Image: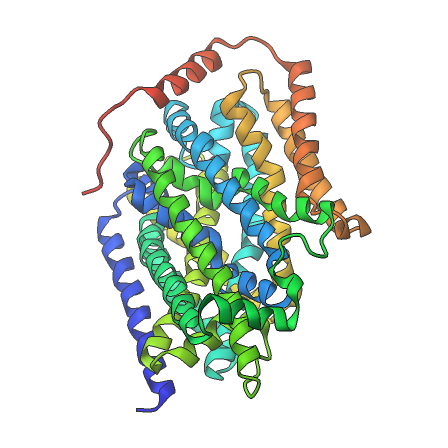
Length: 499
């Protein structure tokens, strides 16, 4: 068999495995709560790996190594900020959100939680939240499909359209039928695959370039400053890069994993597993880039046209074609895990947060699941149409969407969990201001000096606090739920188990 045949075989086995997991999840899904939140029965390890895989996307295996390959360790500050943000999210948000969403009318989406938490009878807050999620994530999903098309185009010399449709078809299939559980279980498999690839590739590469001495000597021969964390970077640039971590508190596809935990207490184990996975994979990505710099410096007859393909190039140089195909599948896993998670969140926004509000009739369990699947299909079709034009601005929107969600929902989620006096007008005003500042700042010359999430996050926070203080009135129901949520974090109870 040819090298490419081996790689096709590896990719086919990976795709078949994902579809098999989706079918298993389909058999376990019986109602809308199962479809959207897996019946609140995720074990901490499952939730942790799922959150990590759905979070990192292709950025971990393509974007980060490519940035370090070009500029050196100065680019590590984004990864440092994200790791700190993820730890804080697991430590403080996860247990309180798991407890509060159950106490507050068993909320299964972020918009429904905010409405129930703040007793918004007008439903405006839920509508605005749902629309923000739907609009941003439709483009977010589209960007993932674009990445899938580019992946197949660069790795297998196939057409962009064929690659995009293949990635879309497989991801839609297991998400459509398996829902949240299907997306989560495939995330676990994909997270493990990503971890193994990011450990094996740099270790083999480290040996290939002559160990630590060979690595550092080769990099210094190109540019000694590439091994420095602050070379060529201003304080503002470092703060701006590290500020990516602020976005974690408002990412619906990540924090929904916290809501699906068996109990608030599971967040402790989830944090340890999730952050360990994140540290190992980030270090692997950084090491891959450094090995790549040294390897191509030592082998000048080889060329790397696209720095973001350094991980792919090293895996194809070091391994048998079949093993290299498995490593390629790890990159595809990173892309697909994020798409599937975002599709489920879009579906929940469409069905739970928008359709249920305008519909006068109550859905049966079966109707809810069917409608949820239709929601996945509708969002996916729109995303495919957007991706078919291979619009580069869609890919650029990933960073913009991260800032948009982080600044719109982040302060609102934190205040709703830890401040009794947050009000609906305060939350709504803050969310709108956060979104507007992201848009205005991100499309102005100021974006070159500071990532838009920083001013937008704090603008939301300030506006929400000021408006809430002006509009706050005592509410016994809110007080009782807040106290119950706090107790739920410390009280141990028998966790739910998904059979």
